Image (cartoon, rainbow, N blue to C red; front, side, top):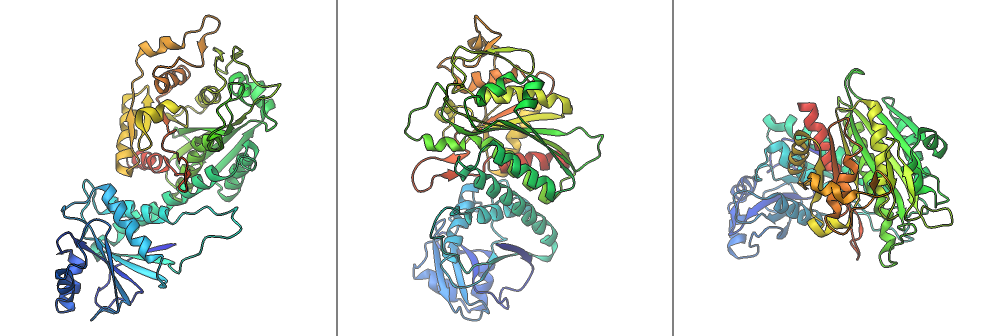
Length: 496
């Protein structure tokens, strides 16, 4: 789908479908009022008949509208409030796209520049609109014998005034980059685990490196991990025939002397739970346990498209957690790259084991800040459901920056505590630390575990177990989150 920005007259604009907003009770937006005036009150007359109430997401299609060059006029309801919420804007965009997909026209023009969205200026509302439209067109039918039918719609034009062209174009370009990153993340997450394993993800990284001169890619195999002393990382993958990989991608968009930011992604390409095996029901969804790594891939993809003037290190901890005669047992003790020993009480708490060694490895890059992203705990879904990611960290400024980025991107997170009292739940009589902290506060104790490996830099942890994919039913699939949050965080750092 192509998105372009234009300043033009509504009355003389040639397009297959022109879209304008109608408020609840027949209130006309600025664009609708101009059309009403040009058509001698035809819109007002139609609305007085009650054909469109104007509630958010309601639509009415008019063919061959009088006094317009457009072939069709699509009215979309935006409710009675003077300002839409982010959710209402998304609902409006979804309703518009649902109609446009059913039509034969190859293009559409959105005259929605006059919409007001709470807390958003023209740039921010445009970016959210375009991100939503682009993301809603995503479909994954790679393995379907019969592909989903393609729509005629190929181009969407956003109308704005001449003074705002540059601002709206910037928002549109960045929105498309973020949407492309989300689509990449969703594709990786939705792939079956017999194809998407650690070596496959390593190949994806190599392909990115070949396509971009300012991206350096290094793949560490199991021999290198053993030489380094990554005992926790290796313990997770030792039950699988698929060997683990640590993927290191370094993007240089700024001077070499500028310290990078680091993103660390959990990439468990399939999680059976190991010897602490999971119940069979719903286990197919454990292919999504690599969505933390996938979201780092997607964020990097967006950064590469925008060529942000920033340095970024992406570390993907990739392994497959399987039960076998060689698998790690509950009660095993391993030595991490940091030198700390870990008693593995539950092999299904494996994400923190690959992450802890990777977080220690991140020290060598002397990062400004490190953010790890992981589908880490089912407890996070119990606490926050599927709308909000869990957030913890050792630096208040970094945590606040991520919370702010989440609000700006409408990809929200919520801070959970990391009080010292929780650390005591990880005490082990046999090792420095246990890999689980009991049934209470499972998300927090997982964060406490990771915090013991992040003392050399500002660090934050995003638990996306509830937000990275939609579970069950026809809508099951990866969401692409938290690519918008992470990309916004990096955009904010560029501005700063």
